[in-house]
Image 1: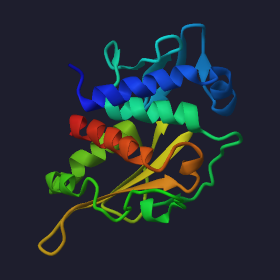
Image 2 (image 1 turned 60 degrees about the horizontal axis):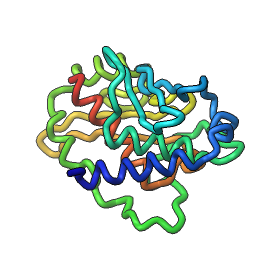
Image 3 (image 1 turned 45 degrees about the vertical axis):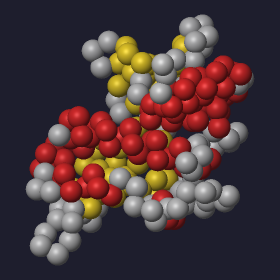
Image 4 (image 1 turned 120 degrees about the vertical axis):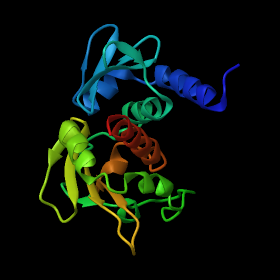
Length: 200
């Protein structure tokens, strides 16, 4: 029997199939053929079946993407606004212009994950260099990632000490909400954090 995550993903898959796929291809810089819409996710090939709606990610071979990535891709393809474009300015969740969201941006999502990064600055540097480009921003480790080639994300990490716990901070382009709903940014971050943990 399907769990709640699987049911939700299946519902979104069905919703995806109702949308105008030609509009998706017009709004976003994507490639497609008769069978699939193609994306790249953190440098890995990703595709969506145009008749099945299944999101697949390729590591060694194509496999169905996890819940968080699937939900992110569905929202990105279905919701992105006409004329969406980047601002070039990075802001945290609290800096996003959210209207009508029931999510508390100060609720501490993923807070507990950071403790596992204590003392792992060099390992995180290696992982972020694999996934993106290291930068000289103010932090122990900082990088610009392109989870999708047209949608960048800034990552900053400060290791903990006797007074402060380790901090992992993600910054979005200010116009991210032209590409996905605010609630979807949490799925987006969850997928990115999962990939970082796998590579540490």
